Image (cartoon, rainbow, N blue to C red):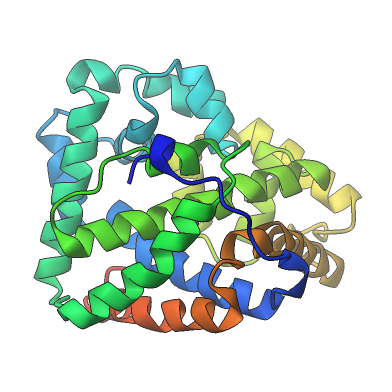
Length: 291
């Protein structure tokens, strides 16, 4: 369903939405979405366009849904990338159009899912779609740039990849909401990345290689976090820093309560369960070992 076809339906009051259920389903869909940036099928698809740099391929594949926008627009949507990283990828549309990158992304996703043995039954796919489709259809896309772009992409014919694309819309919706919370908490693009790597959830080497903040910028962001008491002088996260990071996540959950309200806490947890086989298969294949 295209974005301009989505009904503007009333949603239940999100005040009753269980935030633990919001976190559960958010974690599940994020995990089920993530493989696309790590599998060899994606690297091969990018290489066919002559793009072998991991950071440039990531930016092209993730931003393709927005079309050939100026690099400054991509920078605004991606937030924690340095301007130099995004500017360096500005020529990816010369290698191939956004539409071709999007098609390559879907093809890579399907090939990767088949390689690791994901074969969901028709009933499983139908139930998952019965839960994720109302979420995508009922979402408010105001200020949700990457989510809106992905919601406007025609779903592929492969039912597994179509489910994955609907999951992608919901994942990007949370990501878009997260940026608002980061800004509200005074966490700039490099600062939030330094804090994230300090939690151990994202390897620093990977973050530095793909986001391309230089040594001076990284050190300045670290110093700001030390001054706030969120890192100690050795750049180790403090209890206050961990609490701040959890507060940011909880405030993001609060933003996302309305997203999941159409299916409620029970539906959200069921969707998390239904998407688990995707994550489990890629985990078993070692896809996430580098993280």
